[in-house]
Image (cartoon, rainbow, N blue to C red; front, side, top):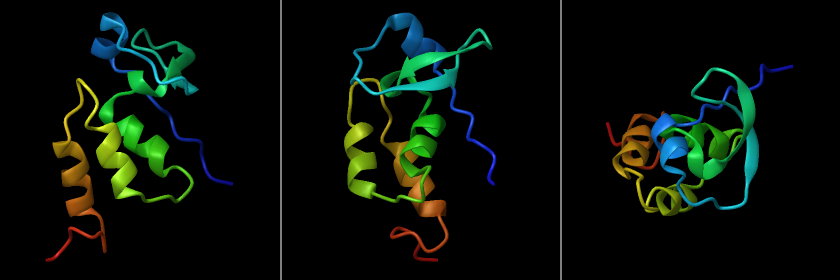
Length: 91
């Protein structure tokens, strides 16, 4: 049995109260406590982990989510570039 992934809420996104997309999950809050947060409030690494948690790899979905306001699409590019055998890994 694999260890569950610990998702983390992004302090800035929680405090600013970014719009939600209606997909709540359990995550570590900025205070350190556990709570329910929308995936829109996850930090970038946690959002990618959530998208890939069941072995999925969908660059189109990842790129679309990181086009939303307040997201940096460069993190998707960087993780794809570093992925072994990923579509952007041409080394």
